[in-house]
Amino acid sequence: MKRLALILSLGLLLAASCAKPGTLSGGPKDELPPVILGTEPRNGTTHFSANEFVINFDEYVSVRDAENNILVSPPMKHKPEYSTRGRGIVVRLRDTLRENTTYLFQFKEGIADFNEGNILNSFEYVFSTGDVIDSMTLRGTVLDAFSGKPHEEPVSVLAFAEEQMADSIGDSVVAKVQPMYMTRCDKEGRFTLNHLRQGRYLLLALEDANKDLHFDAGEPVGFLDTLILATRMPAPPDTIHRDTATLDSAARDSLRIADSIAIAKADSITAAVPQLSIHLSLLKKEAQRVLKSEMPRQGFCEISLALPLSDSSQLVSLDGSPIYFKYEPHRDTLHVWTANPAADSLTLLLTDTNLHDTLSLRYRSKAKTKAPSSKESSLKCLSGTSHPYFDTLWIVSSKPLSNSDTVTDSIVSVFCLSDSTTTRCPIKWKNDILPQGSTRAMLLFDGKQGEKYKITIPDNQFNDIYGKGNDTLVFSTEYTKAEQYGNIILTISRPDSLADSVPVIIELINSSDKLVNQHKLLTDEKVTFSHLKGDKYSLRAFIDYNGDGLWTPGDYYAHRQPEPIFRFEKVLELRENWDMEEKWAPGAGISEL
Image (cartoon, rainbow, N blue to C red; front, top):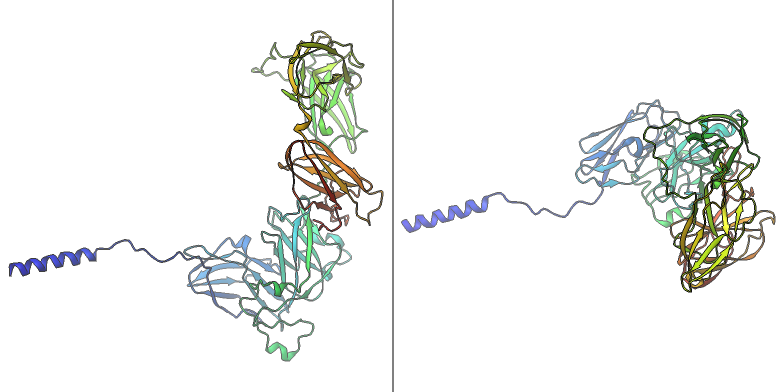
């Protein structure tokens, strides 16, 4: 009996041990989106008069950012409310519905399952307050006009019906009237406008930052040159679509639109619909203005402008004292020196296209202003320790020089480190200061490839506008060799249909997406981009219709499309001491972006 009791006790302990809760391994992670079981009223209902509809699912779901992920066409003044009820989503309508109108709800990424967040992509619910469901469509792609890629920010596509463009509104319809239909591009730039009425439409693509469904100044925009005739929607499997213009009473009874109406993506379904192409760009109509004007130290001013100064611009001192100034690169910055180095105020008049501005500048000393270093030279070399053998050696002065309008004597000492020989060379200054003076000079010296040089410019050879002589400048540099560079040789053919007076601009871009070189083409030509570092290069070309040498974006109100841009289909991988030859006909055989 004792043995039996012991066996029973051990069995009970073992059973208790087995009954303790443990960690369940579970099944595979749910990665499937929720499945629609049905809608109330059914998708595709006509004579719709309810104030809400329900979408039922096979699991619990949630609504994700309805403001950005659920789109309604035609747009509603009072936006619907979205809530969940059991395993369904309830959409409550707060607007008075228009008569004989088809409404389309695009849920984009607005529905996800509750537990895992799996998204139901691009579900559409459609109903009509009239007899029929409108069945026309417009489809296409919106790309950035300059890069040829989908725009980084969300892009809305608005469709304005022809009857909305009354004579009293004209082009301004896009800024004053709500569109008849709207949608949003996907990440690839594709868009689909379904369930449109039969007719012609003005299509507008824009980065609608404030979500007001209007084109506002400062928003990137793309448009088509003509009104576009909507085409019939292709019918997904098990679905009958009929054009509202030909649908008779017998056919209305058989109209069926499945819940998967907008999910079908087979190529065979979309191939029959014309694919539109819209190019998005931003026209900056910024007026010329002074962004900043300051006097950071006595006798010196700096002026920054919104746009480059034109050749007709003028700068005058209203104090009557002489001034010296120079344009910085791109002509959007001016450096100004006064004749008196201790001047602490200056009044200037700056004129340019649509600009007539009086600038009153004053120096305000700062208690902790860093004093200039006594070792800082008034001259410096623009080259580093390595200097391109084919380029000029440039030096610059920190202040305008007053006696630098001609070629100087051979005052520069050039010491060759390889053979310990010394030669001398002159300096030629470039006059870029008005009324007189200069800040840049070239050393008239032809260095040999691969040689290292120590260059010395003695002190007190040049006087600045305040009568102070220059400090001694000593620097060393090594000239590069020809075999450190490669060349790209292009045989370019212009588009046959292009007028001879219209330039084609060819641009060479490096792997960092920086512009390396540019060439203006007025005829078929062989173009050589020489002295290039080993790198991966790409080619870009645009048709310069306005002849300003710059790519020009589109202008909706001027009915002007962005200047066409083309890209060479190959990446040019150039090695040192290597020549590459290619043929290219931009605009012929290559798709326009």
